Image (cartoon, rainbow, N blue to C red):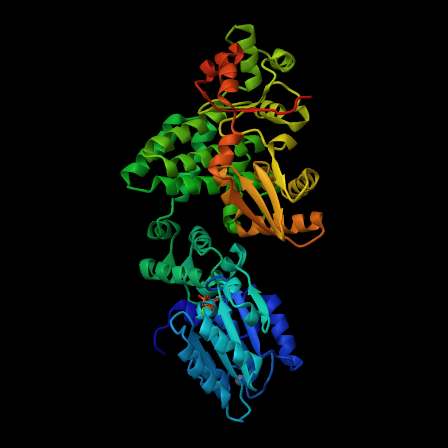
Length: 578
Ligand SMILES: Nc1ncnc2c1ncn2[C@@H]1O[C@H](COP(=O)(O)OP(=O)(O)OP(=O)(O)O)[C@@H](O)[C@H]1O
Ligand SMILES: [Mg+2]
Ligand SMILES: [Zn+2]
C-alpha cells in the first residue's frame, strides 16, 4: 500500500470511532435504524473535527450490503470503495471552488436520475456557505423536491452564513471542537499503532497547538515524525513548533519563588540571544500561571488545565509554592505585560519590567506592615499587630473621601490579605482602595457598571452564579465595565486596557459556561459574547483631572508612591457616597 499521511490513514471508519461527536452519531444511528434518514443535513463545526468523516460513514451505513445499518461491515465492495474514496455513491463537492450556478445545475442533473438500484448517493457540499446566491437558489429547489435516494450533507464552518431557506429544510448538527483530553487520547492510540514513542510533554504541546482540531493534531504529529523519527522528544517538538521549553517556565516560577531578579532577567537575556519571540514567551508564561492558579483553586486534576496526567504533579508542586492571591496577581501582571508587549516598541524592556514586577510582587513586605511604617514615619520592622491597627486607622481617617480606586504601576504591591480587604466591595464605604499593579479594583459597584436591557440585580446574580461555579472565571467577569442584553445576545463589555480579560472570556469553554449560567438566571436562552468598550466610553469612565490632582497632593499617597516607586494610572470617582 502506498504511503498515507497519518490523518488520512486513521480516518474513523465507523460511528463508534468518531471521537467526541456522540450527540451526532447517536442521532444518525437511530435515524438509520428507524429508516428516518433526512434528505438534507447541515454538519457545522470547526476545521478537522469529523464532518466529512461522519458524512462518509453515513454513506457507508446506507450502502453496505448488510445495510442500511448503523454498523457498516467495512469489508463489502461498497464499504471498501467508500473508505478508499473511489465510490461513485459519495459525491464530494468543494463549494468554495465550485460556487456557481452551473455546478449546482450539473449536480442536480447528476442526482435527478439516480439508478433504481438499491443505492443511496450522499452528496457532500463542503464549505456550503460559499455558494453564490443563485447557486443557493438552485440547491434550494433540489431540497424542496428531494430526489429519492439522495442525501445532501452541507458541511460548513459558518452555518450562520447559509441561506435561511436552506437551513430550514435541513437537519442541523453541530460538531464540537475536541477537548485536550480527547485529542491526547486519540494521539496516544495512533502513536501506539504507528509504533511511535512520544514524550508526554511533546504530546501536550501538539494537543494544545491543535486547538480542538483532530486533523491539525494528526498533521502536527506527522510533522514531528518527519523531524524526529519514531522517537519524539519534548524538546525537539518544542523547537520544531517554536514553543517555549517547559524548563524555561519552570525556571521563571523558580525565580519568582526565590525572589531572584537575576535569574528572571537571565531568562530574558537567554531568549534574546537565542532569537526567541518574547511575546510568545509572555503568552506561554500567562498560560502557565493560569494553570498554576487553576491548580490552586480547583486542584491539579482539573479538566480546565490543558496538561497530560504526567505533567500534573509538577504543576501541583509549583502551585503549592504560592497563595491563590499571589498567583492571581502574577497572572494579572503578566496579562498587563502582554498588553505592553503588543502595543509598545522594545519588547525586551517591557518583558524585563514585567518579570521584575513579578519578582517584586512576590517578595514585597505585606502592605499592612509598610503602611504602618509610613504612618509611624519610622522605617523598620513592625509586628503584624501594630500593622493591623495602623491599617484600620488608615481606613477611618484617610482623605480624600471621593476616591474609589487608585492603581499603582509598576511596582506597588500589597499583601494579599490587605489587597483583598481593601478591594472588597463590602467595604465600599472605605475612603481609599489600594490595589496591586494591574489589578484594578473590580468594577462591581452598581455605580461603575453600565447596563442595558438587563438589571443590575440580574448582572449581580449572574456574576455570583459564575463565581460559585468557577472562581477563576468569576474573577475575570468582575473586570467587566458593562452588560447589555439585546434580543438573545448578552454582551459583556470590557474597557480597552482590559482586553486580555475579554480575550480570556472569549474562549469556547468560558463562553459556554457563562452562557449556561446566564440563560439559567434570565430564564431564557441567550448567546454570550465579550466586547471592548469604545475608546470614548472608556475615556469618559476614567477619572477627572481634578480628582487626580487632589489625590496626587495627598501626603499619604505621596509617601506611598515614593516608597514603592509607582505612579498613579487611574483615579475614579464614586458618584454616590454613602
Ligand atoms: N471526531 C474525530 N474523531 C476521530 N478522528 C477525527 C475526528 N475529526 C477529525 N479526525 C481526523 O481528522 C481527519 C480529518 O477529518 P474530517 O475531514 O472529517 O474533518 P472536517 O470536519 O471535515 O474538516 P474540514 O472542515 O476542514 O473539512 C480525519 O481523517 C481523522 O483522521
Ligand atoms: Mg471536511
Ligand atoms: Zn459493508
